[in-house]
Image (cartoon, rainbow, N blue to C red; front, side, top):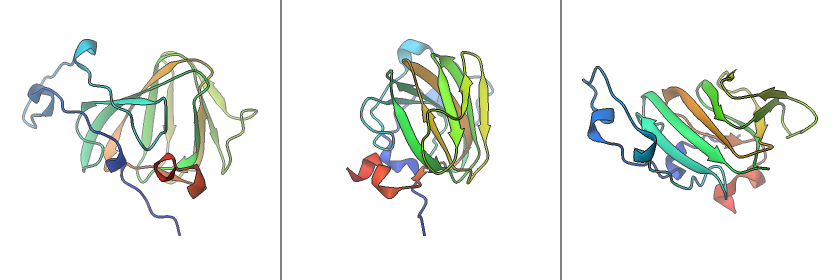
Length: 153
């Protein structure tokens, strides 16, 4: 039985207090204010930043993931729905228990992808890419093959 692993392995960056306050009706975050970290859950080369909320806790969150050309995320699931918007580059997503670069769908800048909780999927990136993810936490990632989990290497 696979155990869901919360994104606690990610170094959640501190945000300006205006973006964290629960009673705010408006918040902005400029690109130069983003604090990028290396997320253990996605492996070497990936960078992660929190825009709003905390993906490890209940409630709405918005995060970004930046990956280099050739980056791959092996087959995995999430405990909650995942919403992905491509901000730059190209995102390939496929469903199934094993990453297959001959299958899946290509999402380009401005495109969106939705994956329901528990759906097995994978991703690969032919160029440097930034995606924005949002949803309801707590969010996590469980790899189909535990040996693919970068936190265990």
